[in-house]
Length: 108
Image 1 (tube, helix red, strand yellow):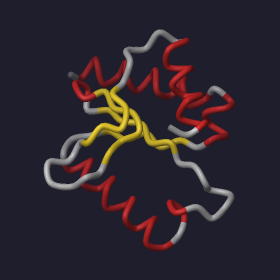
Image 2: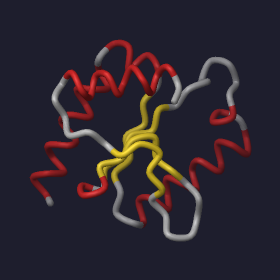
Image 3: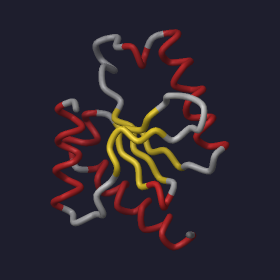
Image 4: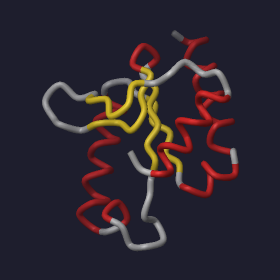
């Protein structure tokens, strides 16, 4: 677990949200995993690190692979919230996560 994921997990606990599953494998045929997932609500959070250091997720093939993953997730009915370190550290990400979890509960 990255430092950003650990910080987000701490926020999730502090805000009293239902604990998510970590490293959740969502696809029946692929090995893709979500950083955090609330399976019953089909809601996932992906922490996007390395944006400013030319990390795997921001370069050609890695970026394309992520797009395929997110497209497949949507086809399976998942809502995926992507956040970076700035959103997590500022506290904005946890506010969005809380709101989206609430909305998914209302539509379930």
